[in-house]
Image (cartoon, rainbow, N blue to C red; front, side, top):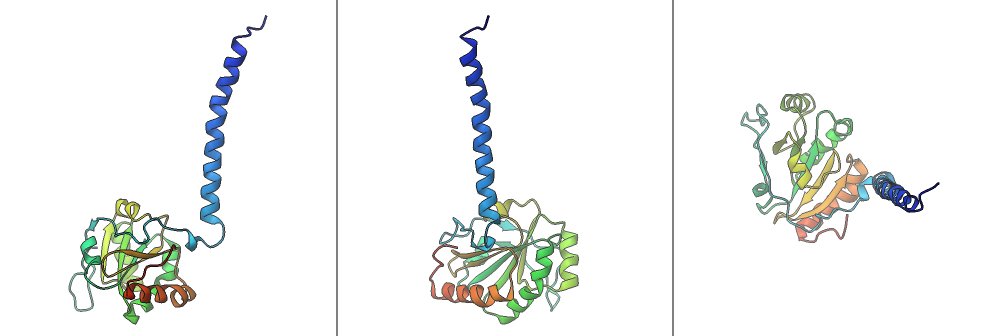
Length: 203
């Protein structure tokens, strides 16, 4: 004979398993849609208009400037020196980073803003070889071997590029590799806005 009390209990137990699974699936679907639908560079960042996070990263040992002096590391203090800064988060193992690298070299040569880098979850020797082979566009590089600083920056994945205003406020975030069109149509105008002290409204 069926126990009338046990049936509701079994139904409750089933729902206790099903509901979390449904909620998890919905969250995964939402994340996938936001990350992969349309243009990924348009994902909004909660950091726009806020100060850059606190961080202090060591330099990439062995990396030298053209005159032979060491390329310095990177910290938040470097972003509050009264000039606009472009912060590029990259890694030697990242294929899109290699694709965008010639554009970073060109961007640094324009001299419109100071270009610095964060080497994300990379072996320093590999980062050094990458820049030795392709050229170094960065005035400073912070080694973020564990990826902890990138978490504070809200990095989804490399490459990502931030424009930081003269006072250390994050003015713009670009997700994914830079393109010539992105530099001409977005990055340079955003640098001009940051120079004037006007942050982008959302992205």
